[in-house]
Length: 296
Image 1 (cartoon, one colour):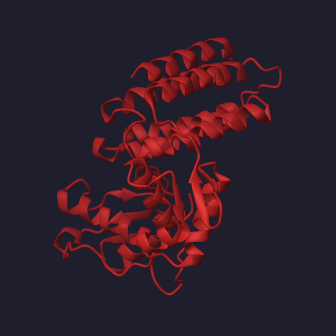
Image 2: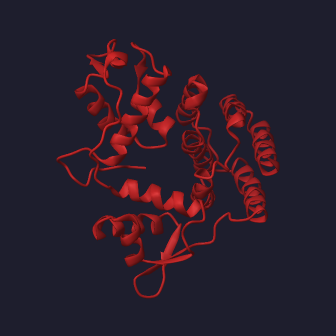
């Protein structure tokens, strides 16, 4: 997900939100002076792209909470705990903010199946241009479609136990078969990248292993494996399933927080099997992984 400030003269609300989360972690002691911060780890932790993280780090650096060291990275400043640990204010709404708000409200059953653009403007107070770009993004991702007039309709999602179970059964068929395609290629570079992503997640403090952070990594894992099949339709099917699950991300449905590390370890076993050329075993592990998730 990308987040570009609608107002080039000031930070976006997403950047401020991330900065405030870092300040809260300093306040609680989860982040100590001298601790190294990376855009990649923070993006995964907060479930965003690197762009808003980069902006948040600039805000924090301007206020003295972090220090950027040449050829070394960004670190929590030694004097950070001594600074006023008040939340930052002064945000403007962006397409990313609105996207996350709509997804969250839909996941909590706050929004009806069909909504008008007028209703959405009144509810979120977003400029019409921001609203339109957000709605077009959601339509491109297969989450909504145009209704009559200026209305929009949410497409069917995983809104019942039966639908969620059927989704997993469908994925067991599609994803496992992808490993058996004659065009499947175990790309060592892409698999090694997935492994590093998972190792970084496991190295996080438990409080940072949020469902949102896991979702982005999990989606990348399954879509990468599907892409390695060499079959564009398998890849498209898996990507669509991930989009349908975005609503569940905000309900913390995906996986219970206590099981995030366990699911991560299962991914690593699949990755290692593929790197070792044991494709059939990787397929068996993938089938078991999805089967267990369907019963969770």
